[in-house]
Length: 344
Image (cartoon, rainbow, N blue to C red; front, side, top):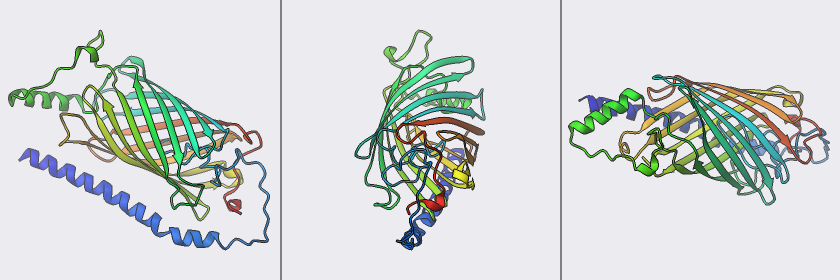
């Protein structure tokens, strides 16, 4: 009876999350025709010279989307050819059980011709007194067409992560993991021990390699609201073969119109996580909260997102802070162009 209750609860959470996502996605898609109609009404005779953009537009995209890091949780489209993006990312997770986790990531991305881009990431983790280099990643992305040639401007993303550290905490709460292990013993199930090659001298599993694919979507609506959505799938190679899929989406509007120095909005993320022993009992994590982006100078930006968990499997709270800089052609000329002057 208890198992049925838990399953019913998880099913309800799963349906609720996807209903919210589908409602938002449906509203966005339904508004596309009116947006495209509005854009065609621009007077042909009007000429607007925009000076001071932070970088050249990436194949016609707004400057805010042309820097690829749309918000702490989402990325969008590609960089202009020759542009270089550097970012420092902090993620703090306050779990419902146990000490918090702190993740630090440094990323560098380079824009290539023909709507390609490559990036590299190094991640460090601090948890319960331990600090380690967690992983090294190589990424590639490709935009299917120039900006606004295809609705929602789809971009393909692939990443390979090389595990360089140890698994110093599990996705599941400690007491839940212990209860499941005890249940397996009582049921006379075979619990596979970890391979000796996958353990370090302290008896902690080594971080496995993993690959990830994403579909990146982005759009600017009415030249005032910018939106991005990422669908992702990640699969670990080895150890417990963890698997994660889900989506993240963000929407922002400028509230300081001068060069769009200040933007605010909302973002959310849903994650479904399983491993080889829990394919039928996934973790459902859903977090949502505000996001704010501030540009102190023409080529730097600070993003902050405090998010709050909405399910029992979610962290109580997550905090993301991103500091980024943009270099390359045009990066020394100024800030983003006002939204009212785009696409003219």
